[in-house]
Length: 96
Image 1 (cartoon, helix red, strand yellow):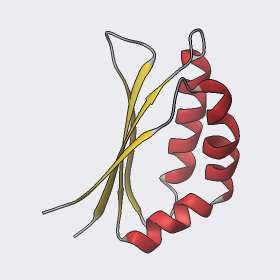
Image 2 (spheres, rainbow, N blue to C red):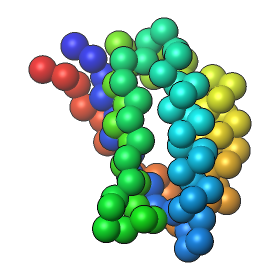
Image 3 (cartoon, rainbow, N blue to C red):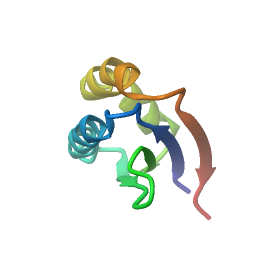
Image 4 (cartoon, rainbow, N blue to C red):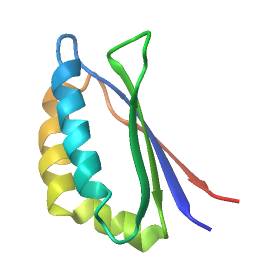
């Protein structure tokens, strides 16, 4: 069983392009983590400010390692606050 995290984000007005760049870099770095099975950022084609991340990890320890990684701290913790309109909405699942 894998741990799945779905994150919904909304970019501030005129910040969607910047958020896309941060998410692309975060995806590249996160996919290299040993416990990361999938890391897929998506953007709503009808609302360029709306994003959904699908993340899948081998277990909770892998997710915890992701959250403390240098790239997560630099990009998600460091860059997101100036780009997001409101808080991240996070939902956890387990694969069947």
